[in-house]
Amino acid sequence: MAKRWYHDKALGIIRSNNFQLHPPRNKDNNVIRNSYGNLEYPLLFSATHQPDMGYRIDFLAESIESLDPCEPTP
Image 1 (cartoon, rainbow, N blue to C red):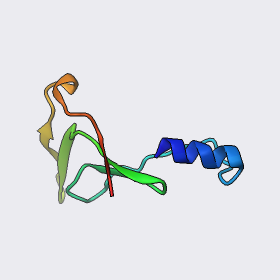
Image 2: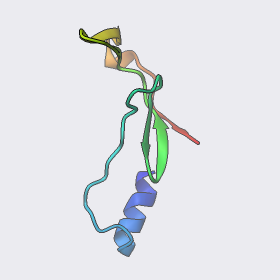
Image 3: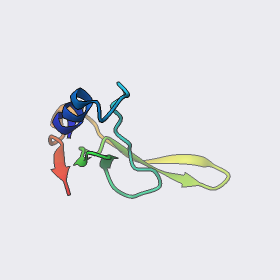
């Protein structure tokens, strides 16, 4: 993903220096997206919105070191 983005940046197809990954919002998954591809990241935390109560943390990883590496997704 990043290699393709930097390639297009070098060709002038992309003008911005801002490489962004977009986290899922209101979706029950851990796939981070951008126009050059998607990555499935290890789930660090998950929260659900409770009307009139804000967010509730459903899952919080104890240690980042114990998580699997990210994987490209279709």
